[in-house]
Length: 296
Image (cartoon, rainbow, N blue to C red):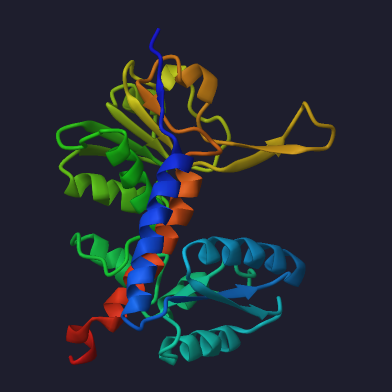
Protein backbone atom coordinates (compact mmCIF):
# COMPACT_ATOMS: atom_id res chain seq x y z
CA UNK A 1 0.00 0.00 0.00
CA UNK A 2 1.37 3.41 -0.98
CA UNK A 3 1.34 6.46 1.25
CA UNK A 4 0.18 9.12 -1.19
CA UNK A 5 1.72 12.56 -1.01
CA UNK A 6 -1.00 15.14 -0.44
CA UNK A 7 -0.44 18.11 -2.76
CA UNK A 8 -1.28 21.04 -0.49
CA UNK A 9 -3.13 23.58 -2.62
CA UNK A 10 -3.56 26.01 0.28
CA UNK A 11 0.19 26.27 0.85
CA UNK A 12 0.88 26.65 -2.88
CA UNK A 13 -1.81 29.33 -3.16
CA UNK A 14 -0.33 31.23 -0.21
CA UNK A 15 3.08 31.24 -1.91
CA UNK A 16 1.59 32.50 -5.19
CA UNK A 17 -0.27 35.26 -3.36
CA UNK A 18 2.92 36.37 -1.61
CA UNK A 19 4.67 36.63 -4.97
CA UNK A 20 1.68 38.48 -6.44
CA UNK A 21 1.67 40.96 -3.57
CA UNK A 22 5.34 41.75 -4.27
CA UNK A 23 4.50 42.34 -7.95
CA UNK A 24 1.63 44.72 -7.15
CA UNK A 25 3.90 46.67 -4.80
CA UNK A 26 6.54 46.94 -7.52
CA UNK A 27 3.95 48.21 -9.97
CA UNK A 28 2.69 50.74 -7.41
CA UNK A 29 6.26 52.01 -7.02
CA UNK A 30 6.28 52.52 -10.80
CA UNK A 31 3.05 54.52 -10.58
CA UNK A 32 0.69 51.80 -11.82
CA UNK A 33 -2.38 50.45 -10.04
CA UNK A 34 -3.87 47.02 -10.63
CA UNK A 35 -7.66 47.11 -10.69
CA UNK A 36 -10.06 44.22 -11.20
CA UNK A 37 -13.68 44.94 -12.13
CA UNK A 38 -16.25 42.14 -11.86
CA UNK A 39 -19.57 42.02 -13.72
CA UNK A 40 -22.33 40.10 -11.97
CA UNK A 41 -25.74 39.39 -13.53
CA UNK A 42 -28.51 37.94 -11.37
CA UNK A 43 -29.41 37.53 -7.69
CA UNK A 44 -28.10 40.64 -5.87
CA UNK A 45 -27.92 38.86 -2.50
CA UNK A 46 -25.76 36.04 -3.87
CA UNK A 47 -23.76 38.61 -5.82
CA UNK A 48 -23.04 40.60 -2.68
CA UNK A 49 -21.66 37.53 -0.91
CA UNK A 50 -19.54 36.56 -3.90
CA UNK A 51 -18.27 40.12 -4.29
CA UNK A 52 -17.27 40.24 -0.62
CA UNK A 53 -15.13 37.14 -1.13
CA UNK A 54 -13.57 38.51 -4.33
CA UNK A 55 -12.87 41.86 -2.69
CA UNK A 56 -11.17 40.14 0.26
CA UNK A 57 -8.89 38.13 -2.02
CA UNK A 58 -7.99 41.21 -4.06
CA UNK A 59 -7.29 43.26 -0.95
CA UNK A 60 -4.88 40.58 0.29
CA UNK A 61 -2.57 41.32 -2.66
CA UNK A 62 -3.23 45.08 -2.98
CA UNK A 63 -5.48 44.86 -6.04
CA UNK A 64 -8.30 47.40 -6.26
CA UNK A 65 -11.70 45.79 -6.79
CA UNK A 66 -15.09 47.00 -8.03
CA UNK A 67 -18.34 45.12 -8.63
CA UNK A 68 -20.87 46.02 -11.34
CA UNK A 69 -24.15 44.27 -10.52
CA UNK A 70 -26.84 43.96 -13.19
CA UNK A 71 -30.33 42.59 -12.67
CA UNK A 72 -31.36 39.08 -13.67
CA UNK A 73 -33.42 40.57 -16.52
CA UNK A 74 -30.45 42.44 -18.02
CA UNK A 75 -30.22 42.12 -21.80
CA UNK A 76 -27.18 41.05 -23.79
CA UNK A 77 -26.96 44.61 -25.05
CA UNK A 78 -26.80 45.99 -21.51
CA UNK A 79 -24.14 43.48 -20.47
CA UNK A 80 -22.08 44.15 -23.58
CA UNK A 81 -22.40 47.90 -22.99
CA UNK A 82 -21.02 47.50 -19.46
CA UNK A 83 -18.13 45.33 -20.71
CA UNK A 84 -17.38 47.84 -23.49
CA UNK A 85 -17.26 50.61 -20.90
CA UNK A 86 -14.73 48.66 -18.82
CA UNK A 87 -12.69 47.74 -21.91
CA UNK A 88 -12.15 51.42 -22.72
CA UNK A 89 -11.54 52.59 -19.14
CA UNK A 90 -7.76 52.90 -18.74
CA UNK A 91 -8.13 52.67 -14.96
CA UNK A 92 -9.55 49.14 -15.30
CA UNK A 93 -6.76 46.63 -15.90
CA UNK A 94 -8.77 43.41 -15.48
CA UNK A 95 -12.33 42.25 -16.14
CA UNK A 96 -14.04 39.26 -14.56
CA UNK A 97 -17.45 38.05 -15.78
CA UNK A 98 -19.01 36.07 -12.96
CA UNK A 99 -20.80 32.90 -14.07
CA UNK A 100 -23.32 31.48 -14.50
CA UNK A 101 -25.22 34.04 -16.53
CA UNK A 102 -29.02 33.80 -16.86
CA UNK A 103 -30.28 31.28 -19.42
CA UNK A 104 -31.34 33.95 -21.91
CA UNK A 105 -27.76 35.24 -22.24
CA UNK A 106 -25.24 33.88 -24.78
CA UNK A 107 -22.32 33.33 -22.40
CA UNK A 108 -19.55 32.79 -25.02
CA UNK A 109 -20.63 35.96 -26.81
CA UNK A 110 -20.27 37.95 -23.59
CA UNK A 111 -16.86 36.40 -22.89
CA UNK A 112 -15.78 37.28 -26.41
CA UNK A 113 -16.68 40.91 -25.71
CA UNK A 114 -13.95 41.17 -23.03
CA UNK A 115 -10.67 42.72 -24.21
CA UNK A 116 -8.24 39.74 -24.37
CA UNK A 117 -5.63 41.84 -22.54
CA UNK A 118 -8.08 42.40 -19.64
CA UNK A 119 -9.50 38.87 -19.65
CA UNK A 120 -8.04 37.77 -16.30
CA UNK A 121 -9.72 34.34 -16.43
CA UNK A 122 -8.45 33.56 -19.91
CA UNK A 123 -11.95 32.67 -21.12
CA UNK A 124 -12.16 34.92 -24.18
CA UNK A 125 -12.21 32.59 -27.22
CA UNK A 126 -9.20 34.48 -28.55
CA UNK A 127 -7.15 33.47 -25.51
CA UNK A 128 -8.41 29.89 -25.58
CA UNK A 129 -7.67 29.71 -29.31
CA UNK A 130 -4.15 31.08 -28.84
CA UNK A 131 -3.54 28.30 -26.32
CA UNK A 132 -3.55 25.92 -29.30
CA UNK A 133 -0.33 27.65 -30.38
CA UNK A 134 1.00 27.77 -26.80
CA UNK A 135 0.80 31.57 -26.96
CA UNK A 136 -2.25 32.84 -25.02
CA UNK A 137 -2.24 36.42 -23.79
CA UNK A 138 -3.77 35.07 -20.57
CA UNK A 139 -4.46 31.34 -20.14
CA UNK A 140 -7.49 29.82 -18.36
CA UNK A 141 -6.91 29.96 -14.60
CA UNK A 142 -7.94 26.40 -13.74
CA UNK A 143 -5.61 24.92 -16.33
CA UNK A 144 -2.76 27.10 -15.09
CA UNK A 145 -3.55 25.98 -11.54
CA UNK A 146 -3.26 22.31 -12.52
CA UNK A 147 0.13 22.90 -14.13
CA UNK A 148 1.28 24.80 -11.04
CA UNK A 149 0.23 21.91 -8.80
CA UNK A 150 2.14 19.45 -10.99
CA UNK A 151 5.24 21.62 -10.81
CA UNK A 152 5.09 21.80 -7.02
CA UNK A 153 4.56 18.03 -6.88
CA UNK A 154 7.78 17.56 -8.86
CA UNK A 155 5.88 16.05 -11.79
CA UNK A 156 7.55 16.48 -15.18
CA UNK A 157 4.82 15.69 -17.78
CA UNK A 158 7.31 15.03 -20.60
CA UNK A 159 6.96 11.43 -21.74
CA UNK A 160 4.23 10.51 -19.28
CA UNK A 161 1.01 8.76 -20.26
CA UNK A 162 -1.61 11.27 -19.14
CA UNK A 163 -5.38 10.94 -19.12
CA UNK A 164 -7.68 13.95 -18.79
CA UNK A 165 -11.25 12.98 -17.90
CA UNK A 166 -13.61 15.79 -18.91
CA UNK A 167 -13.12 18.11 -21.86
CA UNK A 168 -14.81 21.33 -20.82
CA UNK A 169 -13.69 24.55 -22.48
CA UNK A 170 -12.14 26.20 -19.40
CA UNK A 171 -10.61 23.16 -17.67
CA UNK A 172 -10.31 19.80 -19.43
CA UNK A 173 -9.49 20.93 -22.95
CA UNK A 174 -6.98 23.63 -21.94
CA UNK A 175 -5.32 21.16 -19.55
CA UNK A 176 -5.07 18.65 -22.41
CA UNK A 177 -3.36 21.27 -24.58
CA UNK A 178 -0.95 22.31 -21.82
CA UNK A 179 0.09 18.68 -21.31
CA UNK A 180 0.58 18.19 -25.04
CA UNK A 181 2.81 21.28 -25.13
CA UNK A 182 4.79 19.67 -22.28
CA UNK A 183 5.18 16.55 -24.48
CA UNK A 184 3.04 14.20 -22.44
CA UNK A 185 1.11 11.54 -24.37
CA UNK A 186 -2.46 12.58 -23.64
CA UNK A 187 -5.71 10.66 -23.84
CA UNK A 188 -8.81 12.87 -23.71
CA UNK A 189 -11.81 11.14 -22.13
CA UNK A 190 -15.36 12.48 -22.04
CA UNK A 191 -19.01 11.51 -21.62
CA UNK A 192 -18.96 9.19 -24.64
CA UNK A 193 -15.74 7.37 -23.73
CA UNK A 194 -16.27 3.61 -23.69
CA UNK A 195 -14.72 1.64 -20.83
CA UNK A 196 -13.26 4.56 -18.92
CA UNK A 197 -11.31 2.27 -16.60
CA UNK A 198 -9.38 0.80 -19.54
CA UNK A 199 -7.99 4.27 -20.27
CA UNK A 200 -7.43 5.63 -16.76
CA UNK A 201 -5.72 2.46 -15.48
CA UNK A 202 -2.84 3.11 -17.89
CA UNK A 203 -2.26 6.71 -16.79
CA UNK A 204 0.91 7.85 -15.05
CA UNK A 205 -0.92 11.14 -14.59
CA UNK A 206 -4.70 11.27 -14.14
CA UNK A 207 -6.57 14.58 -14.15
CA UNK A 208 -10.31 14.57 -13.53
CA UNK A 209 -12.45 17.62 -14.38
CA UNK A 210 -16.00 16.37 -14.82
CA UNK A 211 -18.11 17.77 -11.99
CA UNK A 212 -19.51 14.36 -11.06
CA UNK A 213 -19.09 13.46 -7.37
CA UNK A 214 -16.89 10.44 -6.65
CA UNK A 215 -16.72 9.29 -10.28
CA UNK A 216 -13.20 7.92 -9.98
CA UNK A 217 -12.33 5.09 -7.59
CA UNK A 218 -9.30 2.94 -6.88
CA UNK A 219 -10.22 0.64 -9.75
CA UNK A 220 -9.60 3.52 -12.18
CA UNK A 221 -6.10 4.32 -10.96
CA UNK A 222 -2.72 2.83 -11.82
CA UNK A 223 -0.55 2.12 -8.79
CA UNK A 224 1.84 5.01 -8.27
CA UNK A 225 -0.03 7.45 -10.51
CA UNK A 226 -0.39 11.16 -9.78
CA UNK A 227 -4.04 12.22 -9.44
CA UNK A 228 -5.30 15.80 -9.79
CA UNK A 229 -8.96 16.27 -8.84
CA UNK A 230 -10.44 19.42 -10.40
CA UNK A 231 -14.03 18.61 -9.44
CA UNK A 232 -15.86 20.74 -6.88
CA UNK A 233 -19.25 19.29 -5.97
CA UNK A 234 -21.75 20.10 -3.21
CA UNK A 235 -23.41 16.97 -1.81
CA UNK A 236 -25.56 16.23 1.26
CA UNK A 237 -23.55 15.71 4.44
CA UNK A 238 -24.92 12.75 6.40
CA UNK A 239 -23.14 13.96 9.52
CA UNK A 240 -25.02 17.25 9.48
CA UNK A 241 -28.79 17.31 9.35
CA UNK A 242 -29.74 19.23 6.21
CA UNK A 243 -26.11 20.25 5.67
CA UNK A 244 -23.82 19.94 2.69
CA UNK A 245 -20.14 19.25 2.10
CA UNK A 246 -17.73 19.79 -0.78
CA UNK A 247 -16.28 16.72 -2.51
CA UNK A 248 -14.32 16.09 -5.67
CA UNK A 249 -14.72 13.83 -8.68
CA UNK A 250 -12.38 11.32 -7.02
CA UNK A 251 -13.12 8.98 -4.12
CA UNK A 252 -10.24 10.41 -2.16
CA UNK A 253 -9.76 7.91 0.65
CA UNK A 254 -9.57 4.82 -1.55
CA UNK A 255 -7.60 6.43 -4.38
CA UNK A 256 -5.03 7.82 -1.92
CA UNK A 257 -4.15 4.22 -1.05
CA UNK A 258 -2.93 3.42 -4.57
CA UNK A 259 -1.61 6.67 -6.06
CA UNK A 260 1.70 8.37 -5.29
CA UNK A 261 0.33 11.93 -5.04
CA UNK A 262 -3.15 13.43 -4.94
CA UNK A 263 -4.94 16.77 -4.51
CA UNK A 264 -7.62 16.97 -1.83
CA UNK A 265 -11.04 18.60 -2.25
CA UNK A 266 -11.37 21.11 -0.76
CA UNK A 267 -7.85 22.45 -0.43
CA UNK A 268 -6.35 21.40 -3.75
CA UNK A 269 -7.06 22.94 -7.15
CA UNK A 270 -9.60 25.48 -5.82
CA UNK A 271 -7.37 27.80 -3.77
CA UNK A 272 -4.61 27.65 -6.39
CA UNK A 273 -7.09 28.71 -9.09
CA UNK A 274 -8.05 31.77 -7.01
CA UNK A 275 -4.38 32.65 -6.49
CA UNK A 276 -3.68 32.23 -10.21
CA UNK A 277 -6.59 34.57 -11.01
CA UNK A 278 -4.98 37.26 -8.86
CA UNK A 279 -1.60 36.68 -10.47
CA UNK A 280 -3.22 36.87 -13.91
CA UNK A 281 -4.78 40.20 -12.93
CA UNK A 282 -1.29 41.55 -12.28
CA UNK A 283 0.04 40.01 -15.50
CA UNK A 284 -2.83 41.66 -17.39
CA UNK A 285 -1.98 45.04 -15.91
CA UNK A 286 1.69 44.61 -16.74
CA UNK A 287 0.88 43.86 -20.37
CA UNK A 288 -1.22 47.01 -20.62
CA UNK A 289 1.51 49.19 -19.15
CA UNK A 290 4.19 47.62 -21.36
CA UNK A 291 5.82 50.53 -23.25
CA UNK A 292 6.02 48.42 -26.41
CA UNK A 293 2.23 48.01 -26.41
CA UNK A 294 1.55 51.62 -25.39
CA UNK A 295 3.77 52.90 -28.20
CA UNK A 296 2.53 50.36 -30.75
